[in-house]
Image (tube, rainbow, N blue to C red; front, side):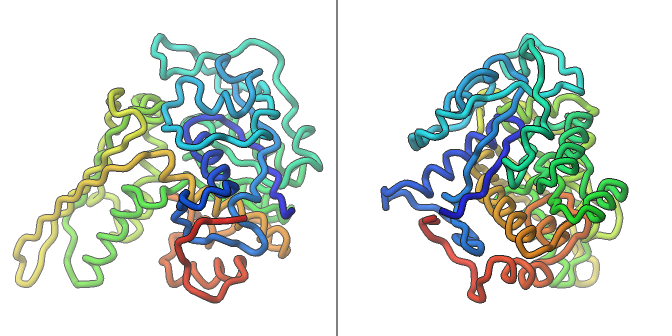
Length: 364
């Protein structure tokens, strides 16, 4: 079996969706259909991703099996498939809390466990191929400590949250010098508000429309939206969400990312509204309004399994350091904003495919 040994840092909604996607890919039920941009990347199918370590700080998850913790509060993902037996054999370990997380009265708040934390670098050493950072938005110090652990243990890193690693010159230089693959920052969804917003702007610009202003607003009821009510945490998300849009328009004045609205009743169901004002012909007005509704966490899982497999293949091919093309494909705030035509040749080289991407069951 071609296994990619993975450590999950943060067992939240995205981790839960990731585990269910892996389980679906391993399932013999042919009725389970997976829309996968890259069913195979080299020898790796989605089902070849093998979680070995799980780390969190919430008392409702620490000490529980990974399969149980994946659905423990404050997680609100839908459950559609039975997780495999080996996920029950993994115990969630106590991680470091370098960001001094304080419990709040809301059920959506992290409730820190009490006890000694693990030595992450020692756990990773020779046991893990890829660490996936799925911590809540805003966990900067803990993310930096995880990056240090990856450098010490020679483990690739997928930074799925809006803490600057791949875009930070100092961190990028260190991963480049050690030739350790790094993909970041802030995971895109398979088809979310960022992908839709970028696609609309690219189309309008290609048709010669002068974009005057564009606005994005998001609503949701999961723990991520709860955390984003903190203005300091949201500022990091606003930066990563707006980076590609600003790159397209050439400035920041025309891009407005409104504060995310936390609506508990929505659970994991996210709604996004995109508004674009523009000019056509001899200064005549164009107004565009689009809304998107999708389950937030499953929408991210497909891109996450691609990022994990791409980073594994890059390391096997001796391609270390920050991976600009994979980051541009998988992340909202990559170190280099690139269009699909620039990205695809590198991804196809890593995947070993010379045919267009397709949709399939995603068998391993």
